[in-house]
Image (cartoon, rainbow over all chains, first blue to last red; front, side, top):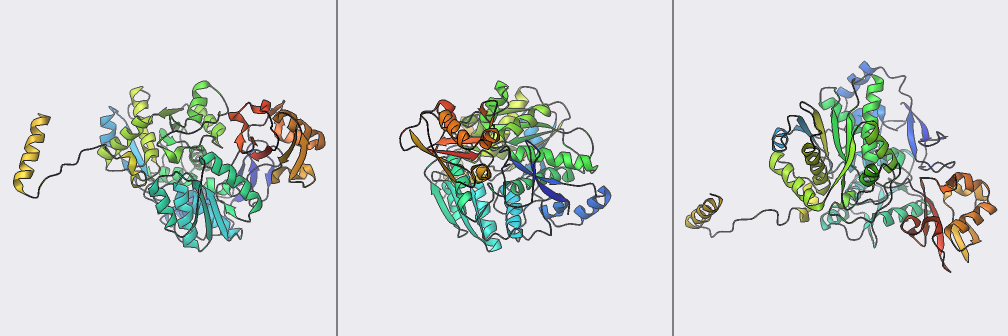
Length: 412
Length: 90
């Protein structure tokens, strides 16, 4: 195993591989450090191809000291070519959809939680917990249930009903907090000081975040061991956005793939756009916001990895854009109509930003673009309500004929 | 104004292990200066050039000071000041 230590991203101070997330010297975030120098690329490639049908095929690049124990393995979700979407947007480009709704609890959060829960077991924790905007809640409750661990899931009390139901069913301790996500997160940061629990996105966050790299690995592998030219990726805390970049870089450094690193386009909802605002203003830190958007899974007003997401967007020649609630609904509809994939509001944000880039003429002819669709439409049904008309008829032929005759006349 | 400042685990080596520090001050800036007077090591750990480092969050009775007047946020009787790492969540 290549994993070495926890290392501060700000000052470089190193720590042992335990449950810790903030540097004692400068308060910067800790990240897992590896030494990949002992890996032979050809051998690693063979090992990956002969590996499991999920994220554990990439275990060489994950933070474990032995084989991870996890009965609910996520990953190897479909990468689908979306020519009809490209056509609708007037693009002469290769558009690919990485459909991460096809995970055990229907979002990319299964990746990070599988890594965090397996690490929690390795470190000897008996209880896992999280602060969540919804998708993480589903994943923590499910993976804890599968592993036989106790769990506490803290969410804003006003979350979408579908996400509450799809959490409580796993038998977790579901806690609705009267406050927004940032308040839930602060509470969990305080709780992590007093409870002997593995908070997946607090004291286990360095490990948890590593799970997002598997999205980059899969993308490269599914494109035939090649890099895309551009990715469009939603930003909430900024962790996914920066870790996908790290995944591509690690494989390039090792020689598994080659070429220029992709351009990174970040996608936020206008009603919660601290990173897009900082990008537009030229700031290197984000000013926190009070979220007001239908994209609740992206409603983090104080993004922990905001500064790094900004750096990544700028360094790669990309940008961070935002779209309003109507554009989010239109994005959900557009993806559904052109690919048969029904995504949640976060996916609407991502497709909305792709449409914006297309409109601005930023996507060149022949470019290979990957969109990260991180969650399932059935979890945010309100966003689809009233977006279409249902024909209601009596159960006889005449009724059907007259309904569609009328409709055709109206259309004509 | 007497106020309790809650110190996170990561900084307790600088307070001799204390989880709370009692000081007085009328703004967050004054309160933090009083904390630094008592525990000199803390200044460098959470501030840089007179400002809070970018991964340090400070709350007055649960409310982030960046939604208020930052270090000039006033302290009322009974308020509690909490310092936390800004690197959790998501």
